Length: 279
Image (tube, rainbow, N blue to C red; front, side, top):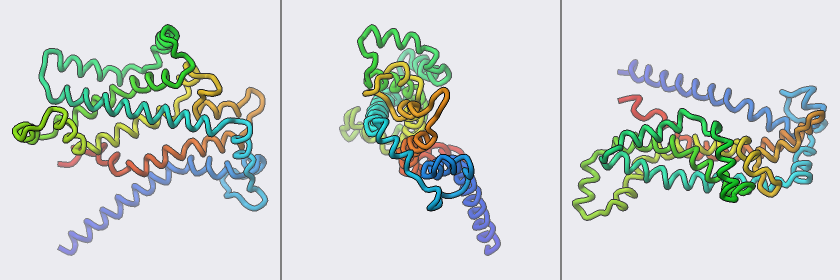
């Protein structure tokens, strides 16, 4: 018995060691960017892996970001677009997934397959058509255009993942709620806490590409008042000269929300990814 417990503890320690190794490997580029953002230009290229010292420490990159670029506005634009897009994905995705998993109607499987096709077909293939559509409805150079595009981009994955999780909820539980007089909307709200791992996974996987996207902000909202963080950072990159201090500083600031979200939803993300792996 003691040998079994010892073996279990060793396996747990090995798993934690592997997890820490992968975490360190994944965070190393982020830490490298953050460390170099506090160094002078000569130190960035001369000793990129060294920590800042009193001789190399320099905040010129952050001063440039807040002086030359309207970074607070870019940050708020990204936060607004990402937050509203995730909210629309959550509302529409959970409702559509609930309908597909709960109700049987003609075309149910076809509609689910139609949503799944959005995962396999990149939305960027329809950039020209999307641009023409936004021009026709007068939404070019607005943040609302980005919100609509990102909502459409995130719905296929959200519906596919959430519908699979909702199908695993025992039907007896929902029938019991109906017997007690619960409405369909009440049942929908009762199901949501049971699929928190899936919700955390969907939110993280949609938040990262939305926050880091450069393609659609450059095409649909290139005006300075509507620039996002990623697009605003491109202002410091030139054809012949690049302000690397400002680039590293802006990228460090832009990575903070993604890291915070990952820390908050890390447990739900891991549970959502590994659900069903072990019976």
